[in-house]
Length: 505
Image (cartoon, rainbow, N blue to C red; front, side, top):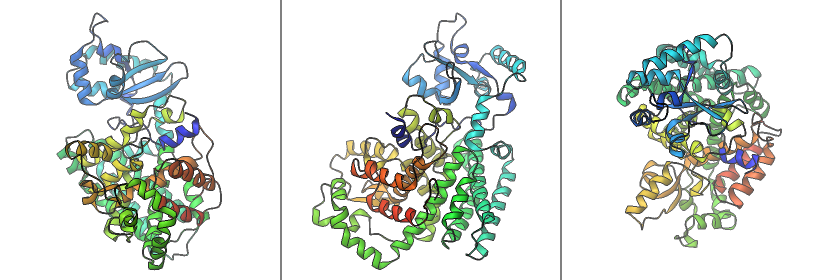
């Protein structure tokens, strides 16, 4: 797999270890070899009881490549599933439990106190002698402001989020002709802060029981919903030109935050663009006319049991190509904001030359989906966007919760078939009547586009917007139908109307 293919397939997916504390308090900056925890006193026998509890806890492992001096976090469960003795000397990697993990296991009476005390002493000896490379990775991924936000109390985070909303509301009250760099700075900083506050608050919630976590995040969810509503109202005015958008995307700090910021903002602006199109009767009527000649074969392949004459717009879009109701628009926009809540700070894996690990890549949607469903009161729509935004119409290169659920459903109901390509509503996707969830298909396109145009990826040269559109059509539609062709053509028109230079909007 070459670097471009790897970049496309990863789509900026990062390793997910949500249990890990990204802000890394000082007392957790030490590490203890996994072997010291898992081996008994004879140094040979594996303590199965320890492993069982560690697997239940779902802890992370700090991985160090001795040869390349690279670091990353990985799930113990994933490593163990691939090799039950992964921690034994056999390659260029060393494996450690973080101090936070030791604290957690100590509370479960798993780790011997002497091991923890020894690790503390070791940490104290070297704290002034070396930098923490993991902390540097975290800063690169989330920006240097993230540590300060993580240290805030829940009440302070909510106050900060309300302050963000006030800034957006102020912009909405101003003339739509404002297109200066100050507007761009307010927008990008506000979006970035909202993302970091949500990530940080949810990290804390992940350490709690489900009921307690939902109670803790309830106000956060409501506040975020109101904030996104303000964003939606602002973007409905279509106040932004190309220059401002370029400035906007140049200003965010941290590679993961840059990606989330761009995908969120570009995603909701594209939703507004789609809404304008779907509200234009003449445009929709013309789409009906060109469906047969330009798109029918794609959708016939997706719905082979449907007769050719019945491949109409209402088959592509359940109930037709309709505008998005305002309340649904906001729920989808919330989903765009938190769609990558399952990402962690292990940038080195995706930025470096490590071999592609599909299990790691797939993990982020599952962890994100489960976390939103079990730990928060975010709307169901947001959780589906998180879990379904890499499905790729069932193509083998895609992954996600829907295909797994569908396959299980087919085992019980082998005659089930999907009669629609996309649905706005929850019922058709939850009852397996449609192949895909509409906002997730929107996000797929935006996510891939951002991946291949991102100037911060070190393993490949970024494509210009025009190059990206050509590549996506060839690789994601012509060769293998992964993204939706009608939505992609709308997105192409949207991009061509808003940018002319590399890496811009």
